[in-house]
Image 1 (tube, rainbow, N blue to C red):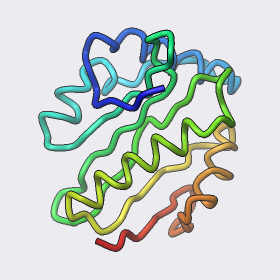
Image 2 (image 1 turned 120 degrees about the vertical axis):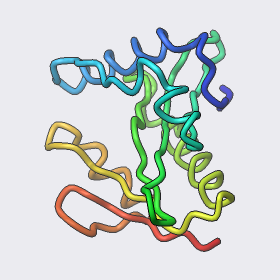
Image 3 (image 1 turned 90 degrees about the vertical axis):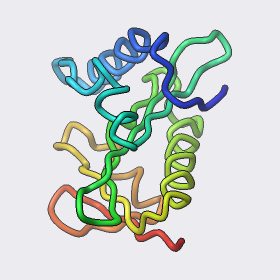
Image 4 (image 1 turned 180 degrees about the horizontal axis):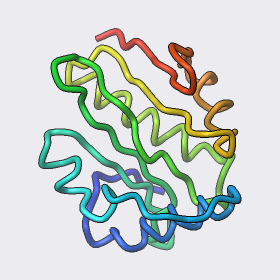
Length: 145
């Protein structure tokens, strides 16, 4: 497995993986508009988006972040792992990659919206990585630059 910066040739495969992951959670899969144009939604704004690419050259995970204007904080978005490959460290590796990059950009905090009750895994995952609640359905991690 490799973690790479977003490459548009993987866009459709990434979208399919995200929709599959949502379906596996029992949600009605709907497409997040930012995933249709990751370059415009993240990269062109000075933010970043990564893909986890499996040994078969297919997308098995993703994560991105956007900066919060007027602050040194960012918000994580779209941390998904292929539903058949969960609990193998892929999400943790994606999160660690994003955290290290964000820290190197001089950012001081990462915020994450946990989603509703159907995203129960988020509510368990982030505390394991030293994120703490700061308001309902949100967690935060202070970075030490």
